[in-house]
Length: 320
Image (cartoon, rainbow, N blue to C red; front, top):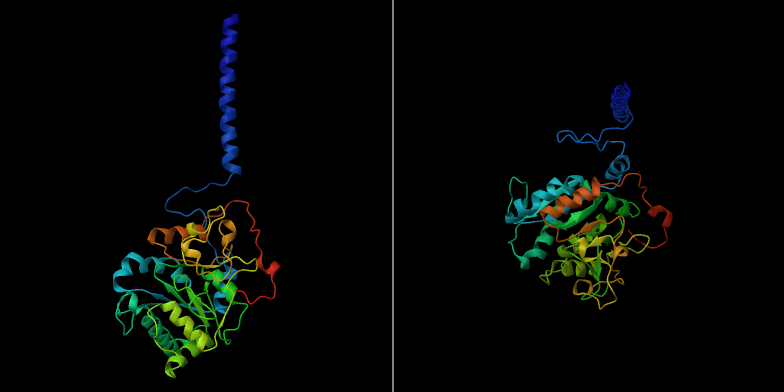
């Protein structure tokens, strides 16, 4: 009889355990939102409300982007810009030696590194003729550059496009006032664009070098276009001529590596190198392009509040 009672008690305990497990699972399902791991439905949608500030800036600070490309790069590079950051420009033009239904704008130039400055001259002349009043600022980028348009617009919002300004990663040698790195991208105000085109029309600027960024920098100096400080309010760089891994790892004290030799400002290696509001990185392949797109617009640590509030650190520098 004693063993029978023990058997009954054991079965009752099992039944109670099962019942409690079922109730606990029901409570979890009721109180905890699902992660919706369904490949056909995204767990989170970026709503118009969450993008309100960016959308407002896109109308207040109109940016025309022109991307320097060529026919053989359309599939391997340029289409990945069109699928990522290119769609955030107010206007995006893909400048090439040949017109195509990509679409590309065909310029009267040949391909090759020796033609890069000619392509730049022709591109800005085309934009001045056809799009001067369609944008406020004019960004040049290579077809392997990743750009965060929202951060660019935020920086430019503090400046007047009717002043002769251009911004980018400032380099020191070859020109008295310096020049902006071509690979990192640079952006001209409307007045800077007018002066660049006028410089060639009046013969004050010439195609005197095959090096695109140096040539443009020389014309900017000749036409009295001011170089803006594109660092953030904490002095960190926003335009980057190389991928993030060139800058982010901490380094022991060492001579400047080759890719930092031309820097106008004292370079910083490690996490302090780069602004929270970085604008560009260069030498970005197709896989990295989509990776940076994901990191920039989708990956978020839950419960994290951004610590860097640039408007709280404003000073009197002419910075972006």
